[in-house]
Length: 124
Figure 1 (tube, rainbow, N blue to C red):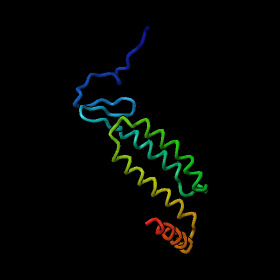
Figure 2 (figure 1 turned 180 degrees about the vertical axis):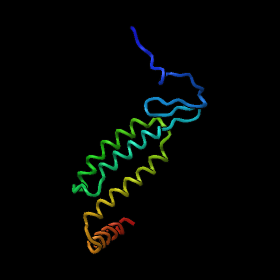
Figure 3 (figure 1 turned 90 degrees about the vertical axis):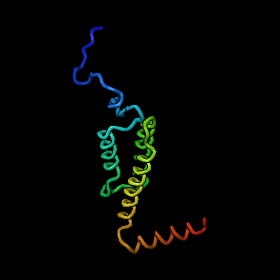
Figure 4 (figure 1 turned 90 degrees about the horizontal axis):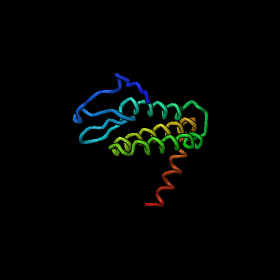
C-alpha cells in the first residue's frame, strides 16, 4: 500500500492545544465545533430561510427539518447544548420573519396575533 502523507495536514500536537478532526475540535476537556463548520451551517440555514423566496412556511420548514436533524445528530458528540439553544432561537426568529412577511401589513399581523393569544389563553 503506497500512500503519500500530506505534510500540511499531518502533524504532532499536544492534547492541551487540541486537534481538529472531522469538523470538531478535540481538546483535553471538551469537544467543540470548528467555527468554519458553524459558519457553513448558518449560511445554509440562511439560504433556506430567505424572506424573499416566495414559498409557504410549511415548505421552508419541510426543507429545513432534515438539515437540522442531520447537523445536530452529526455534532452530538460535541458540547453543543447552549449553542443549539442559541441557534434554535435564531432559526425561530428567521421563520417568524418569513411569516410576518407573508402577512404583508400590520392589520393582518395584529389579527393573527390576537387569534394566537386567545388560543393560548385556553391553556393557562
